[in-house]
Length: 157
Image (cartoon, rainbow, N blue to C red):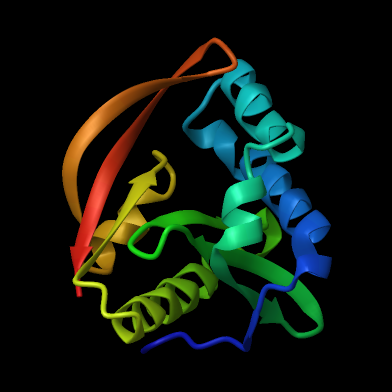
């Protein structure tokens, strides 16, 4: 069964809500894979100047709705990169990520992209694998002086 949710484009007036979802997603779902120190460092990025500014201001994105509530979002920036995809913990595993990724792929194809790339977290990369993305390489990064492992991934369109 293919999950499909009502999606709508992200507007500038949604940027505060998107930042809230970003932080809440990490805080509510991260403990299965990350330490408290990692969760705090990562979720703090939602509010730091310039970290999310470019994807939100110059990217294209979608909100996934669950009834009247915004459950999740995804942003593509630049055109061949999925920069952000986050879901509130209370709405996880309900198909919002799948719906958003499918829409992002449609948009990228419409923009004549040949592939999409992303950097997937430990708790997100299984979804990407299930949707046909491949791991290009694992990498270790630092966020706020804290080490993180993630996966550079790619999907041919």
